[in-house]
Image (cartoon, rainbow, N blue to C red; front, side, top):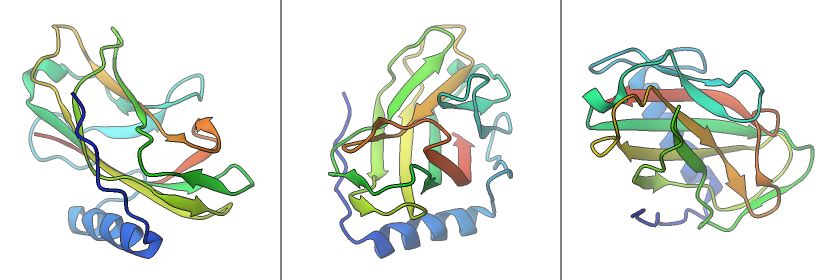
Length: 161
């Protein structure tokens, strides 16, 4: 079961929180963070339709995966999040829908080029054997699912717990 996040209407506050978490973690768009376990990063999948963790790792060996990500609206138009849209999150290769807790989700209208962020924790404890990655794709009220060309990665922190 997914816990509903508190929507953040104040875009500046949302970005400040995400930026602070990323700065404290000392990461950038291509800099992975390692607490324990494998060093993972978020990258566009081969077909460019969603983001995936890389490299493959046995996710069943860990309790949780925390992702803090800042994305740029690359749609060329305003994108609206009403605050209750959850990004699509699934495991690979079996497409399991794991429990997710959201600390920060985008809410409001973001013009082209504006930044929006997520801070989420994925519960890995109930995964079946063989799950080696996690896929992530933002979802907005305006655009539906947003591929990496529409939700452009600016910075990400991926931490295995």
